Length: 387
Image (cartoon, rainbow, N blue to C red; front, side):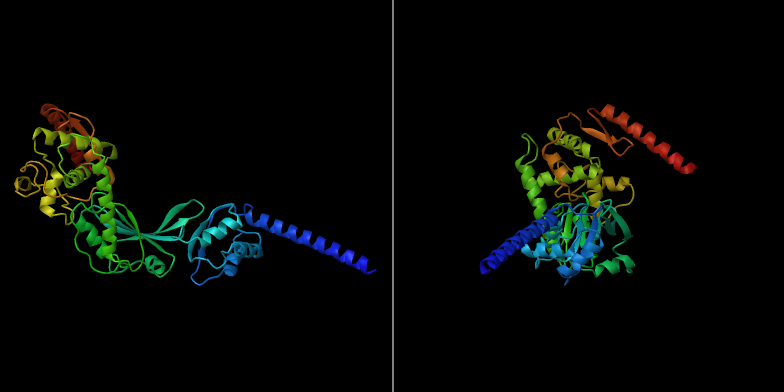
């Protein structure tokens, strides 16, 4: 009898173990299998939240099928206590295992609200925008002048949220003064900032956080520009009339200000290289403008004849060779163009009316191009008068 009971008990234990094993296998499959989410969602994890709250939110959003399995899986993989605050993009079909990894790995938020401080050549602007997870595109919520005394409600609201991301986007061709002036108007940054040397800041996008110092942001920009210049100088072509990386930076800044067409940079660079090789003056308006403004703002009008004749260290109509300093902060492409220009015989160029330029090897050809440009300008002026 006891033998029979023991046998039955052993059988039941074996069956229970098999059932438990089956449950574990089933649970593991549920945890690792693609989830039911049809479209991406933005999951916001509040500071101080826990996995129970997050799993309930995910279940309500239809991102997971079972919140208990979600929590057990996170606990089994030792991630239950690694939950990070922020806004995280959960892609369609993400498994529970993938979602746990997303909300515990750390790093910057991948969706939600972003504030972008854009530092432009002619103006600066602040954008408040939010990522639409279904289209993976940002939707603008507000845009305003950073110098405005009263900030829009959209900005004030997100400014107090811990998961709001901040980014400073610096355009190619801005001056160091413009960057420092813009940073002084960004209220989430702290401290004073000295004016860096012209040209020594890399135009790019920089993630920042509340409490970062203005000086530290400028240091990051300067360090990046130094690396770009070092690499480009190391890879320069032979035979250039440029004696140092500092001179390359000066030429790159002129190229940056002369053309906004990416495909033209190396051709524009070739014009200036050819002029330097022939001992011709560069005769470029952006350098004259810098002599007038010193990089502090935009001229906002055409150059006067008196300014073209004014003696400044940057007036390349009057000085030989390069000016003493850059006239703006050039981007990587312009630096590379200065040190690897196109192989041409061009020594002249003028606007073509479409945003680009037309190039010439001889003065006669250049004069014909100039005449065409003046005709285009006259026709545009006539059209404006008739409107």
